[in-house]
Image (cartoon, rainbow, N blue to C red; front, side, top):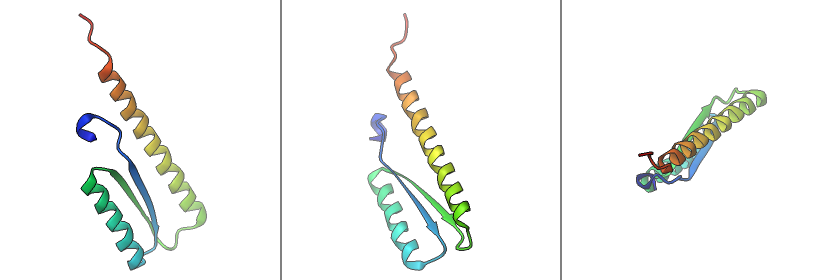
Length: 85
């Protein structure tokens, strides 16, 4: 997909704390994304993070991913515009 300048799926995971099982599970999902050519974002927060901090981080991360998607889409459209002779 990337080689053809197509959009690829993007997995985003937010992990709070250091639970070994959760880290292993999410880590396996990130590796699976790499294997099949998907994008992934792993956001780690301490177990002491407040609900407000988590929501703020989540909102800012979502905004960043939307912006990256829009920029990618915009760049893709620009490539489709034929050059003037």
